[in-house]
View 1: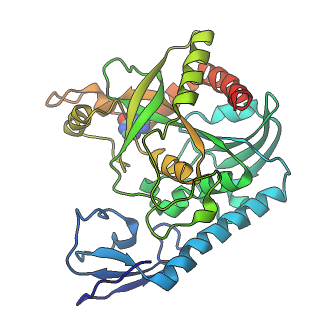
View 2 (view 1 turned 60 degrees about the horizontal axis):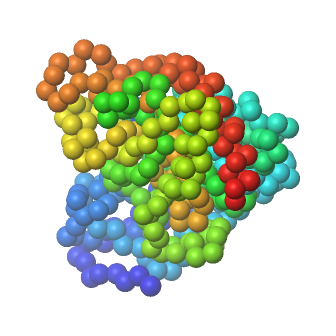
Length: 355
Ligand code: HPA
């Protein structure tokens, strides 16, 4: 499986997590001289506290323990949910900043606070209430996440993507991920709804890092060590979304989402660089959940709500006059709530019908 390279410096971390210290069982790593920032792991929470140039190697025997540990934790969370309801959701929906109101669409709702679900991480951000709502929409069993946690809150990748793992084990086969985003492309004005066509992960983090756990597979051929991301945002679901938006008279654009770590918003120079790179939207979430969902074989639809012009709408070099405010993000969410809810509600029923 994994091989250790001989190294003059061996440092072992056991079970450290950046935010909560709650997941202490697990990671045993050895850092060796020779790598460093830029070796593909820069920014990873495992060695963020260390100033040593390092490359990360997984110790074989503990590697397996680590992933099965994550799997058992996800199973424990599933059990905690099943103690509250027998609903087996087929469609999962993660609601981004300002979009939590959609959860009121769920019929026969069973609402469980994240704090009541074993191992579930708690959001610390205003606008992410931290509730899992299970029930039906138009007869389709759904699990709606009202709020998510982000890497910028200090959460490790395993925690950021833990709810997605749990949704998959609960039976979710389609995941709708939503987020608030800054508009980079000129035509993506505040209030625009955008179907994500692809993403660029600039967070420097990948939740699939570490030993592979094939038991997370929810579909034939999923759960592999290396997995495809060429059609991460399902073309079939995007077509459905565009057709439904047209039917409802809602303008729905398409765009490439670039994910940054945050929590600072971007500088005009960064936005200039992202635009040149081919990005249309920028945000601080989503991509890690999508990577994990694809690892599990879950089909994904991504919808962004443009809450502000990226970097306040300033082209590179101009004077910033309009700073971005988090309240603006929330206000925009409320403004488009009706359209967003109408579109998503109709889509949930169609996704299952067309499955
Ligand atoms: N940048 C990053 N994330 C965001 C933004 C932004 O401009 N707006 C909402 N989320």
